Length: 269
Image 1 (cartoon, helix red, strand yellow):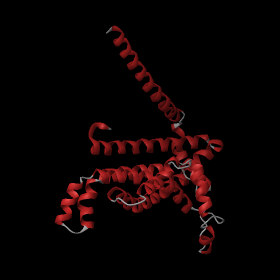
Image 2 (cartoon, one colour; image 1 turned 120 degrees about the horizontal axis):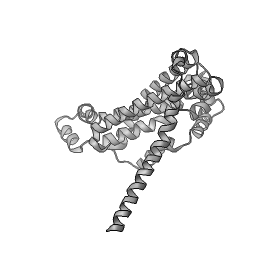
Image 3 (cartoon, helix red, strand yellow; image 1 turned 180 degrees about the vertical axis):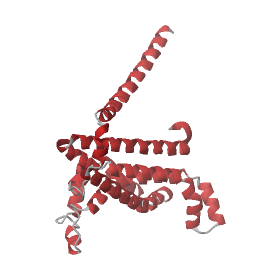
């Protein structure tokens, strides 16, 4: 019994040490950003044209990317969650690829597909559309890397809906659209909202694919992560201010995600 108690205590001590290690490793660098933040310079930096421009580009492009992901992602997730068809697993896997794909590789892939000398580039050029170096390229890069988060969350939410309720509703109402709007959508709303929030946050933080595909043009394609990267050499304080803003946004998004998760799953999150 004595050896078992010592063994249990050692295991608990190791678990506590491992947890403390990761908490410290993650929290200390985040705290360092705020410890190096000069509050007297905060408002002047927030009025910095380059900072304001990067904020505006990030918010606008992330919002458009999230809206587009929602419009096309919800039907895709609903199809994958409610229908069985040949090639479904292949489609499911392809949609997950951007999650594991290195961002720089995603940027190269977008260039090879949509740049003037890419697969679709010449056709787009005939219509006067040149994507690299444009705001649209930023949005496309964000959609590419962030939309899978919405699709995953929405698919899981649709799969959690009680099929007996849906089937009973179909008996009472022959309209599939009405059943979806009155039964499926309300019951899966927390998952859809959580996926939308995570997609917007991922779009806000996108760096590699945006840099490779859209470039880093101040006032045009320069988002907050790109501005942080460039300002580290030119104006470290402005870079620190933008970093602090993104951290606050990230905490807010995570808090919303946790709140929605508790409403959906109870105390497990």
